[in-house]
Length: 139
Image (tube, rainbow, N blue to C red):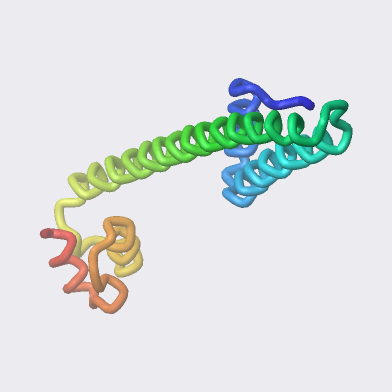
């Protein structure tokens, strides 16, 4: 039974994350879990040992694999969180730089103000008029 090591999993994650498609990552996780379960099932079917011994061995391996899967998913989750935080931080910095470059928000269009308020997650931005968006962004 072939188990991917940490480096191979990370390479697969990098390959799928380049596509920037969370569905691909979900599929990757599902494939990893399904492969582990399938391998365990095949191991049980073709086991040369007694049933009780096989079940004990499988319980130990199951626990080992579950720990590996848990660790890998936690690492993946942390890696995705870090990437998201990095991207959001860069965007927020760009937005702040843009904010400093603009001396007067009244020079901006309603759409530009709306988009800025949306990205900064200002409450109620979607129902604000241009003057209200300017006031909210100034604060």
